[in-house]
Length: 193
Image (cartoon, rainbow, N blue to C red):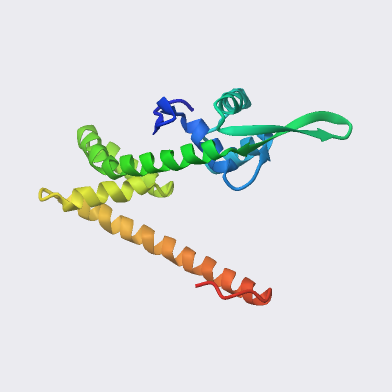
């Protein structure tokens, strides 16, 4: 999973996407490398990060002081390493998120320019796939198109399709909120709004 890097003042070259994902996973609590691999697998779906990519990245991040590894003895098995985020790692994660947010603001414009050049069929295919993946790029792209004075009919069709998609998503969110609210009541907790 190579590709663009996210800017950080701690590195002239920025931080790799793999490193950013690792930092995000370690944000809440220390975990073993294998657990990181499993979480990445569940979250990324078909985009897999292999152990041959993960473990060298963990070692590089440890050398840079972004994470700290701690040996954990296991009875009858080799020791394992549990990794945790350092203060520097948290700072780099925050900077990367800020950088990513800034870049995302411009992605809609860039995406529209690219999609205009590939033709209607490829463009429609991209929108369908992106909706399925719940990509925020779709919304940014549709919004950029519709705010453009030269907005045309295909954007109206996409906008209606996106509206139907969002209605389904909102229905799902409301269902989840209702289930959580009922679960909290059953366990004596506060109501979830």
